Amino acid sequence: MVTLYKAKTKSSLVKSTLTLDIDSSDYEVNGLGRYKQKIAFVSGALPGEKVQAVVLEDKAGFIKARTSKVLSASAERQRPFCPHFNQCGGCQLQYLDNDQQIRLKQQGVDQLIRHQTGLASLPWQSMITGPDTHYRRKARLGVWYDKKSRRLSVGFRAEGSKAITAINECSMLSPQLAPAVTLLPPVIRALPDPTIITHLEIFTAGGQPYVVVRHVKPLTAAQQQSFITGWPQACFLGDDGTEQLQPWQAGTPVPAYTLSEQNVTLQFQPGDFIQINEVVNQQMVSQALAWLQINASDVVLDLYAGIGNFSLAMARYAKTVQGIEGVAKMVQQAATNATLNGLSNVSFAQADLHLPWPAAPWALQRYTKVVLDPARAGAQGAIAQVAALKAAQILYVSCNAATFARDAKVLLEQGYRLEKLAGVDMFPHTSHLELMALFSLPAKQ
Image 1 (cartoon, rainbow, N blue to C red):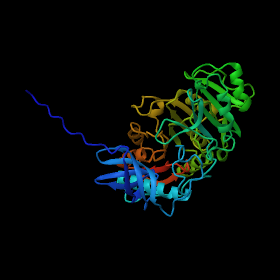
Image 2: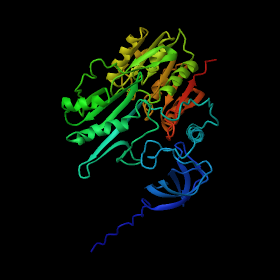
Image 3: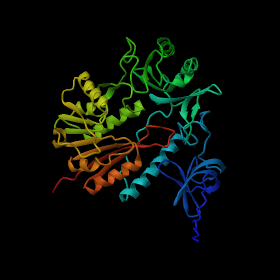
Image 4: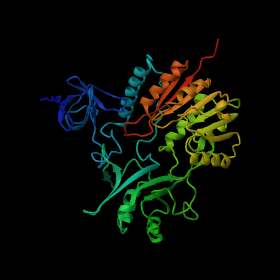
């Protein structure tokens, strides 16, 4: 007879409540403590505090937890100003003054980058900031209708959950967008089947509020009109991306925003990426131009170019600019924007920058300066190819400090120096800090 012995499985701490002393914080302003031999990452906790926290993940070397009760509070802790703070996952740091948020975010990012790159110190410049409320010119509102309770929820996802938190106000939305959370839910509730609406994309452009209504079944003309009555600039997209209106009602201005310092206007369409914070975006573009000192002899490559946010501004001063973007729709929009602004020295092409670059003319060109603004995944797969161009300067705009640190290490290993680094507070009251970095290649002696 064979006896099988089953190894004992280690019991998990998930869902258990621990009492933890918080010593410091990480780059996302999670509190850091220790539980036995494990590091504890605790959301909602500040350095110097003692908290009770519910364990969300239990891994070999660390645990992740969420603060459930503050036993001993930091002097810096304040009362969140939003009534939905404890349910809505849109903001994470309202229990801390915005200046202190910035300080802790930069402190954590500094430690992360130095640890990953081996640099002894970082060349920090002044933080790019703007208003810390009413800054969002674009947002996605989730929609959930429970047939049993007949309860409609329109808002943002709860922290660490797919559940939608119903909100009736949001201090982060621009004044033009803020009414959406009270005006649009009654329109959805009045539909024969509210479940056909999956989410709402709201944004403002040129002082006009717009809404894109996403749905899984066609809406009748009367149902469309009910949205339009309360929110005049509306279009309707099916779950397959098809438009029921082309794409806005007659007379509706094409959505656009202006980079006033560069005299550039950028039109965009539903689904196109634009920076959420208009004030900060203008500062970011202006600082990019100032750091790079773009002049009439420069041949510039703009990677992850989108609809031309950096490309068109640089084209005002450079000899030529080549923009590369992975999404065909945005490549077309960027080209349209170049024509709209009368710029003939800028062109755009489509390419997946994370794959080996094609033997296309743009990839064989010599560039004096390169700009890249990738998504949160960073430029893995592309960064080594960027370094191989040997451009004199590289400006890297990042929305994820961890992937930036990884990519920065590649540039440093290829001989580049980190000349300047600035935090970009694109999303106040959240754990996110964006970065702008200038790398230069020392001239050969």
